[in-house]
Length: 360
Ligand code: KG4
Ligand code: ZN
Image (cartoon, rainbow, N blue to C red; front, side, top):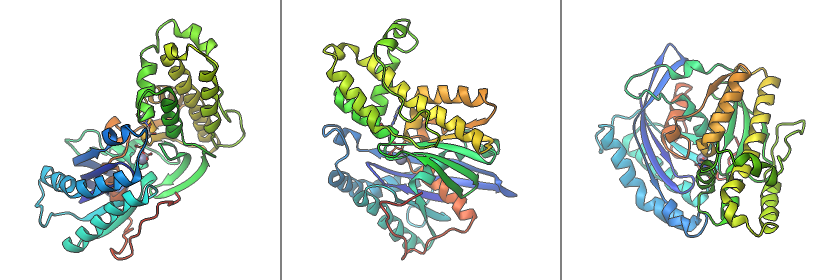
């Protein structure tokens, strides 16, 4: 079964074709990626230090059809009448003026090709990135390693959530950020230090310059940022105080420009400490078998490494997406679409609507 995925929720125009196969039940399903293209606008938005919605919208309109054409070609499909079983598209949450391009394109193509449409929540897409087969050449049943119930730490530019997954399509939010998302905190801290956009990759690269080097031990005691809500008896997060804390720390240190890697190490570690502590304690409380990582911040190498270590130490199974499927992409949307297809969760093309504040 072949699904075209379309993702335009923010500043990436993305399309992908995946092939799904099922042996007996969804538990033995496997998704492999036939083609996956992301047309990134980062270079355009960089100079503004963040995404400019109006510019993003115009870029999506220009890029969407060439990107779709290319993924059909790479997947070896006929561009006029491709042998696709469905189109899966992100319907929210995200920027309304960005989402609408993906949705209207998906509707038009589904109508023209007479195939079903599947609306996908962007967060659900990030989660299903864990179910993409990394051995692309063959259909291995990748997701048999994931046992339910699972706790998913979903961390992106717009969301920080702990989600309990009891089966395919069965999700319950058990905690989330009360203010800024973890990715947003990375982006804002990087902006304060004037080191680039998006903040997550630049902060982690600066931190990596000195991580594991001996001098860090001394600096750690010098620069100390809070771990907000780390001991609270719930699974919520708060990162806006951390952002204020780093601002005050920089303002109070006239030599901060010479210590950017050290600030990055401490800032990154403050976020990682809170995320790991709450993830492990929620998994214990909900008797989870597996812990999964999802969302753009799951590209963070230290988070991947440290979380994996703690998860295995606490005897849970662990899953994280391949690096290329961590930040926004359409393969994850198509993968989520495949599992929805198996449950007949289609949306008639004339009722598929954008919902920029779509809840999870
Ligand atoms: O999921 P995503 O691509 O878009 C949203 O749905 O928001 O996530 C983007 C976020 C940005 O805030 C970016 O700074 C963060 O993910 N990010 C990272 C890393 N790569 C991307 N954060 C920390 N470390 C990274 N390596
Ligand atoms: Zn995302």
